Amino acid sequence: MSDRCMKSVPVSLNNPSIEKNQDLCADCGHCLAVCSEEIGVARQWADKSADAFSCIHCGQCAAVCPERAIRGKSHWREVVRAINDPQKIVVFSTAPSVRVGLGECFGGRPGDFVEGRMVSALRELGADYVLDVAFSADLTIMEEGTEFLRRFLTGSHPLPQFTSCCPAWVKYVETFHPERIGCLSSAKSPISMQGALIKTYFAREQGIDPGRIVNVAVAPCTAKKFEISREELCSSGIYQGIPGLMDNDYVLTTRELAEWITESGIEFYGLDPSSFDSLMGEGSGAGVIFGNTGGVMEAALRMAYSVVSGKEPMDLLLKYRPVRGLDQVKETVVSLGGRDVRAAVIYGTRAAEQLIETGNIDSYDFVEVMTCPGGCISGGGQPDNGVLPVPDRLRMERIKSLYRADEQRMVRSSLDNREIKRLYERFLGEPMGELAQTLLHTCYHSRKGGK
Image (cartoon, rainbow, N blue to C red; front, top):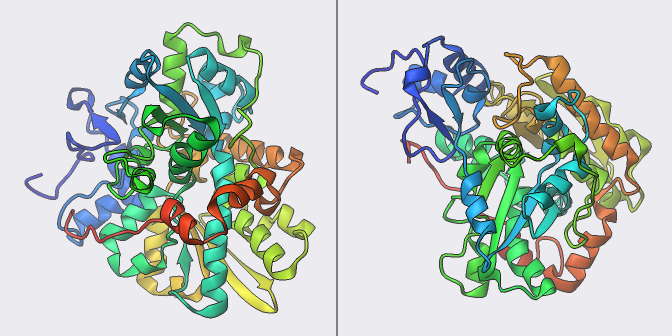
């Protein structure tokens, strides 16, 4: 860019998450508006607060583009090549929000919960294993929740603790507020934890050479394509002494998966539902609601309450209304061990920026931030159901669908996930222990100046 007068969002050729066909661009300004008003990146550039236009890869510009000039980069054909390679074992892991968006691509109702058909479709496409990221969402709660309790009860690290599940938010902090990096939880996102464990624990339990495994995450999020490319997310290779082994190999968005299913001639709603594979295939209700704004906070509060009190989560925490819904900033106070935890739930990095600018962010102990409207259910890789801008009523249908799935689960708290307990007993040891730190935690660095 030669100046700061933009009509549309610039997308560099080496952007790992999104691409732009300038010939299709009508300079309508929708992408620039969302990037400025909801995400805040374009605003930083226009205000000359940033040295360079630093995309955080959320894909919301693609989500509002009526011309489809901006879209997520597609990698499903590379995955097909891996499936066709007899030397490769292809493992898919699916994020919660995919199962409440995918059906819309095939004429389903908004929020239709299509978990079983999604699993069957992946098997039809050639998956060797299909696993559930809700499993590693539970694991994230064990690690991130333990980290928060240590910070909160001992004052060992800066507060507030920021959630780190959203890679666009993490990059926003690294780029525009590197002084706040210490507030980010060191816990990897569920997808990153999943990838590290598939190439270590899962490979060991299944007797598979980790070098043969191709990890494919299916997510609602274009920023996950950036996340898996981070140099530090190769802990499975470091742990096993395998140079160049990354924890995850590909990310497919919901839209990409739908395109692949369509081109393969699969009649999605004609499929009989099937189940995830058993190992790393069981997630609690708390893990499922990770896709909703407030879901990570609600899951963490369920866990923290049980750890501190030694009791099952209160009924209140199994349907914790203060953190639910589409208000952009929500706040609550929960008593843990006689001390009040002040928590905030935010979506939209511009809204988080405003709290940072005013200093109000420091009035909280624990802050969940998701970049996309309503959380991952509206990620940049989700379908729009033919309506732009995506209406809140559609978002609410997806949100309600995940909450219904939570209510229907026998296990509602991450602490009670039997597979998670077995994982710690057989492999990890304890939350925040030495091996957990090696495989499930990471560090972040300043990107100020466009680095």
